[in-house]
Amino acid sequence: MQEDSIVRLPGDVGNATTFNFPVRYKVVKDIDPKVLKNPVEAMKYAKSFVEAAQELEKEGARAIVGGCGFQAIYQKEMSKVLNIPVFTSSLIQVPMVYCSLKKGKKVGIITANSQCLSEEYFEAVGWSLNSVPVEIVGLETLKTRLSAIDGDNEQIIKKEREKSMVNLSVDFVSRNPDIGAIVLECTNLPPYSYAIQRAVKLPVFDVATLVNWVYSSVVCKEFHGYL
Image 1 (spheres, rainbow, N blue to C red):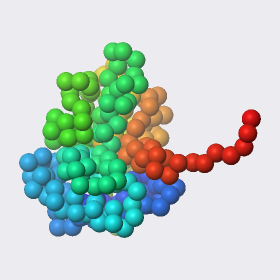
Image 2: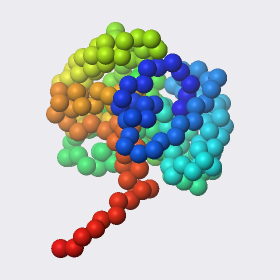
Image 3: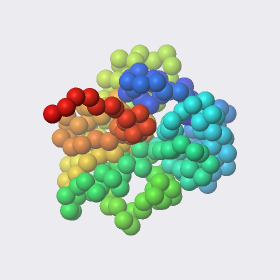
Image 4: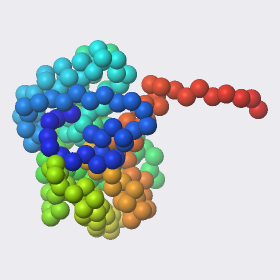
């Protein structure tokens, strides 16, 4: 994860209570989070993120997941050197989600900033706009802060954010009725997935669905009993 002062509500990837299994964090310091939204600038810090992932591997992690959807840009660099699975971004789910949809449907992507989410990030995690039709909307137009700092009232934060996210999602789907499912790029948004889904009546995928899926593959469940 990048270092910041964001309030990590339950559901956020940075809140360990989001998951029902042990997680370990490695924070990459002294890097402005805004850098991740520029692919050229972001690559200047690839080594720092790769080394953080390698440290987690040495500490016993069974898989690595990125703490920001824009870390997609580091997928190839990490997978080259790690001996465990790495999933740098919830965007890695997009082609799988698209394969599940009825012909003619698209994947809707809600991102922290639609002006910054470019083809470079998609290609880094193995797909392209040429092969997967998507619609994208960003949070840059919201008046409510999605990255409140420490000291703000968490209940007020969640209530305000949830209302904003529901309104944005409903408008997004109403303007794009061919959307068949939604993928949330931003790792701060899973706390609102439930409200979004109730409002738009569509499957919603996020970093939490990704982490839970990854966990189920590296720690398989043993089944007992007979027919």
